[in-house]
Each structure stands twice: as C-alpha cells, then as structure tokens.
Image 1: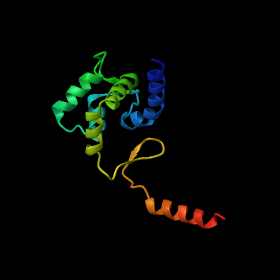
Image 2: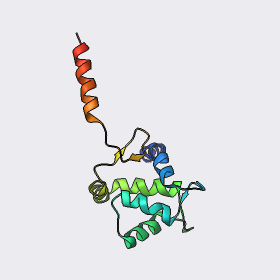
Image 3: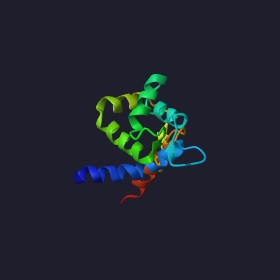
Length: 126
C-alpha cells in the first residue's frame, strides 16, 4: 500500500545511520553474523540461538549476510510486533540514548540543561 511504502521510505532514512554503526570495515553495506550480533543485543535479544534464528529470518535471500534492504524489511516487521518492541525497550540499558542522528550513544541526555534553557526562555517572555 502507499502508506506502507511511505513508512518504509521514512524508516530507510532513519535506519541508515543505525545500520552503518554496525557495518564494520570494509563497510560493504551488509551485516555479517558477527556484525548483527551486537545490533540484536541492543534490541533485547541476547541468546546465541535466538540471534541465529533472527539472522536466518532477516537473511531472506540466504546469502549469509544482511543487506540494508533486508534490514529495513526486518525492522519494519519488527516494529509491527508489539511483543518484540516491548522486549527491545525492556532490554535496552537506560544509559543508552539515540542521538539526533539516530546513533545509539552511551552518553545520557542532559535534561538539567534543557530545563535551565526553558526557564531562561520563560523569563524573557513578556
């Protein structure tokens, strides 16, 4: 459907930096089993057999690697599953945050600085 096409296009643009984070040299725009493992751990999957099953699920053309297109299709389906999304949220350490570029960082967001800026803005209002 048109809506799904637009959603997938948006997902592609959002996921590209995330995908690149796990694509190690030679940066071939494909993820191997070794590269996908940390990504799946970040999504809340931590058992080896489970990671292997998900790898096989993502590798739809069975070439032994996950292409960006396969990755997007998997994430689109992943996001449609309430159970998987809840698990991913529960499995992500609270110290990890998505930066403005979509990359996961270990740096906590500075909420105090935002609060101070908001207070200063309120003071300037007439």
